[in-house]
Length: 294
Image 1 (tube, rainbow, N blue to C red):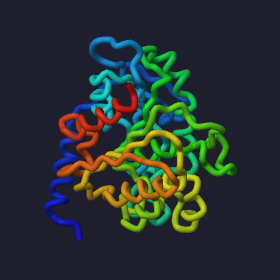
Image 2 (image 1 turned 180 degrees about the horizontal axis):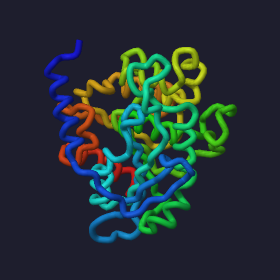
Image 3 (image 1 turned 45 degrees about the horizontal axis):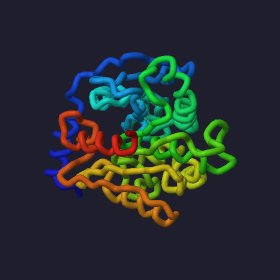
């Protein structure tokens, strides 16, 4: 049973992270026809240092429809104020109404959630060139929080997807990335399901128990290793939403595959301070991104 004090702390951290007003982007562009197939851009603030590294942000929310990109716009603006160019990517999420016997909004759509992340990443160089000329598309770092951390890791591993992956998912060569900074990511689906992370969201994303095992090789970051791309996981030790065990399992899987993944564990930190501009943990995230980007 979860400690009531931990639940209270998590609620306070969530309230702080969601207390910031939404920040309007400097530009936006569509990468498809669906209303959710859009990227919003934030220009780097402050003194010009030449073309700025591009940080691609993938929001969390258990791949569920009620949680969209708006809640990470303060985080995107925070990164822009650190001198980065930022692309905040939206993607199709689960149905807004319960189905398949679920007690709430279902997590994700198969294959649309993955279709969108792949399409957005492939379209970004041209979109950035037109909408955010201050960005240097040769220096790209992907970051994502929670379910978005999963998508960030998945996007970096598309070149190691099985050859029979759905059309448009697999890349013939590694993506041109400086690295990935995954924030409390749902990075190992098997462990996440065992722990009941986000009400079994990983299983819902893959279509339920009957298709979970068959789709795992195409969706689970722990199965897409090694990637050959610099990767760091930032994780709060007090996280009760996506517990530390999930990150540790992914890092162990990487080591078994012959790859070193950085793991930054933050004491006294839960799930939401990683994207809260008012929290010290958010500054740590910016530093981790800077180490890869500059």
